Length: 300
Image 1 (cartoon, rainbow, N blue to C red):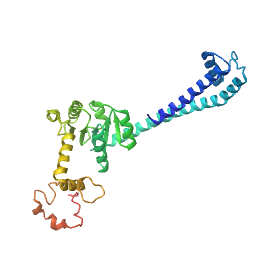
Image 2 (image 1 turned 180 degrees about the vertical axis):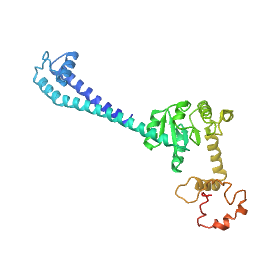
Image 3 (image 1 turned 30 degrees about the vertical axis):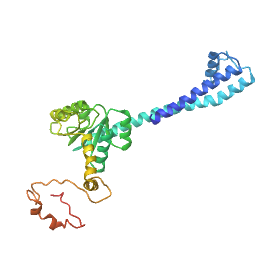
């Protein structure tokens, strides 16, 4: 439940409590029927006061005074807060959509993540940690709220629809990662993405079922990965080769250490193009075996 919904629920609950409190109070003190007691409560709270029904019992008169002071004040407060919440929420939504649209228009060479579930959220966090631009597509309202709270650029909709992918800037994107719940949905998203931008790299989640990876690749996926297969193999390797897996974790997943495995593109202009590591002389030139910096080769 959103914050606006909680406020509206609280205010309506208070209003109903006042109505029923006044109704049962008149029924007990004035011995009115339920409908008459409810009618008198409403016209009192609404400050209409037709005069066709008035309290006669001293307790009923005191109840009327309380309803006028408390009920009328609460009703005025309730309507002001509801209007405020609706206006505030509407303005926030409009401004949020405008800001999101501007961000989408400026995205280039970015990644598109389809699905923000357990796997998608990890992918988004990793892209964020590495400073990579990306946009998330999801059709679940709860997930959209979570994505927006994290500050990610997001689009609500079906990722298999052409207009949604075009809005996400698929023609300017580097890659698309589809990790929605079913193989069928991932196949449709892959087909749609490749149909709009044949050059885009597509990484698709596979359920691991027989033939699922083949279907995804046939649809155009450049890679199809089963998290269950990778997870199972990783757990087995952790038992068989614990030191190796610990080293890989330190090199690839630990944020606080300077040690990290990375990938650097060697272009034709680079001095080490088409050379072996021994021929490149990198170890001697940068003293790579020591704790000194190995230098920055990204400008080649």
